[in-house]
Image 1 (cartoon, rainbow, N blue to C red):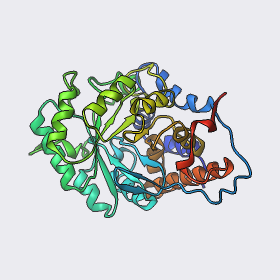
Image 2 (cartoon, one colour):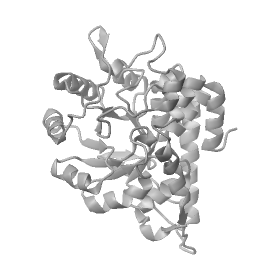
Image 3 (tube, rainbow, N blue to C red):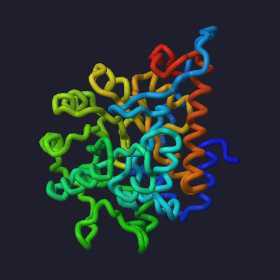
Image 4 (cartoon, helix red, strand yellow):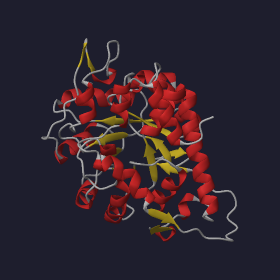
Length: 345
């Protein structure tokens, strides 16, 4: 039985087409940010307390009105059917079984309506790239609403597509025949995702007028943008450097997290992803102010290795590791975490 995220990745590498493995695993440029995300967690140490009588730790949280059994969400990742024939529905059922939220990618290989139908009871959020054609953007939002998604996660770090050398070397420029991004369906056509440098705060305001869903901004890394986000009425912030897949040499997200948390001063929840591979990483991020974390690649490795059961196993490993880490730190609840638990090393 596989027991670590690293073991799941090794198994997934053996099973996946090499070009597809590189698509999921790779980053932009020289992959400096990709490596930095994990390395930054290794440079943080935990300073446990003892004799606290804390009992079994409580790890549930509530995010935008949704109770979540553990503070680990499924981050939006594209093209799940490259990892497993069933794709996103398998991931959604595993997330539902774990009592957590799946953020369905706009670039999913199964339509959001079909994901929701295949995983009744799952709590789904929908990730959106605002398209310059706002009528088409609104059509996608309406589909997410109709599918029962309870939040809109708007990716804002992509005015252009990152330069990914692995994909270029492999010639991976499109999905294999028989797969498509059904959330981009427009009649009989499937549109490409347009990443536009013209997208601005005015588009965020337009989304707020367009939908009653809470809006989470994903890809905020600068505290000035965090403060602007509050002025524009967003419901949560999501600190992310796109897993090192957009602009290379951006700092690791866990390094950026405290400044964003300070900038919003508790006004909205703050989520974070990037390099989270084990329970101590989750605890460190939450001690530094995150309301919850999200994981992307570990979920893909589970999906590639064992489909729905593989994803369920990855999420269970993370849950068990979070619980053990809190117990060893003498912490009764994730609500009790604070920066005094973390030291640079």
